[in-house]
Amino acid sequence: MTLSLCDSLVALTLVCCMRAAAQPAPEPTCPTCAARGESIDSGAAGGSSALVVHCADEATLTAAVAEEFALESLQTYIEQSNVVTGYFGGEGGIRQTAPPAEQSAPVELRFDVGQLSYYKKTVDADAECDDTIWASAHVFVRIGNGLLSFEADGRLRQRRHEPSALFSGEADLATATGSYRPNLDPARPHIGKIFVVVRAAPGHLRGDITPAVFYFRDEAQLRRYQQGAWDQYAELRRLFRLRFPRDRCQDYELPFAHDEAIERLGGRSADEWRERVIGLIGVTAVVDAVWEDDRETEVAVELGEHVVDTACLSSYPRRATELELRIPLAGRLRSTDARLDIPLDDLVVGIDSGAVARVTLRSRVPSATLSAAQREALGTNAEVFLARLDYDLGQGRRPPDGIVELLARTAPNSTTRVGCIAFPPGGKADTGTCRYRR
Image 1 (cartoon, rainbow, N blue to C red):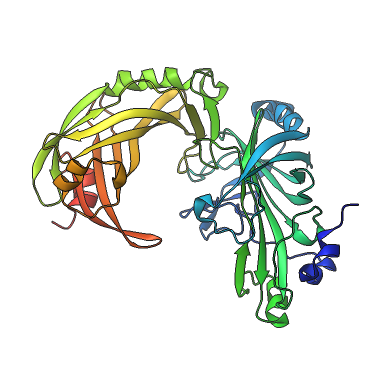
Image 2: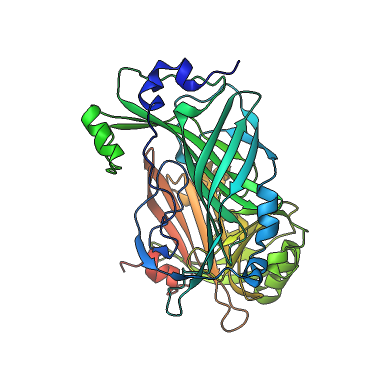
């Protein structure tokens, strides 16, 4: 017989008799609002602060609107039982204190979606705002072969221009069942929760599941937390993080095969959008450049050959109507003084109304991947190289405005810049970041 965690863990008896207070969700609870400034789409175990602005007013959800949002296909997909492979790991800065012994496990998810409501963007709303569908939702989750099963309540949100819907919810850990046994401290007042963040589109599910325990100094602090003082806890321990699927895409992105026609992008594949970009910016470029110490040189930018790998699609965070397509790249960035030779592995294409709105090349390169000769030529203790090249498409084909920053670690979670090269001299990256103090 499967026992409830409440039956088997004395450590969770505190929450067996009451429902845990809701942790602030990673999205505004107000469906007519949106966050401006710092992102609050932060996933498990809490969000971050941002200015909340009025975005939309409630409107009638007509059959035409439902068709525009493709709600029927979305609801049909997520309300059936879907099984994905989840991976236990501490990626994304999550420190695990009690992960299962397994490295991976099958995850079964099935949603019940409540009444759908439509909120139409106001005429004078910010660029971050968009027409949005909201609904309460309930998810049934089963992890592994009897490892952990639970149900979570939350909200489902679908913006008109986003490629996926977002579910954010939580469950009381005490109501979960299964063989998983976290090592908890029964002597300290605490509450256990399971945070669930899932992005869904027909054929795609991705997200993470994070059980966590909030410890409190005493019963009085616990009561304040339950009454809505969300910062009133002494310690937060994330037991584990289970993410799905495993690919090169971020949590907020949807993966697609490089040659797969994407309906949201006019029926074109990532390969076709890459060719469009090449027609705008070219395959190679040579640009005047300058180091932070004023030494001048040139950099050669090469897009390289086509890469057979997953493309990733998301919405542009600062403009609701724009989509962001991230395509794998095998490019190079070389300086003619032989001090710099690094890969460029991401081609990021902003697409709005069927046209290329912006193009960015970028990469993050550990210094360990560089040759000994290049590290000696640079003469720094840099551990990471951050490259970013932005193309201005306003006046046809133009060289990029870019920068490569050389970063050294000063603490486990912080770095400092020990050098940079920007191009062209006097460009935005140069005057705004690299030599901005000169």
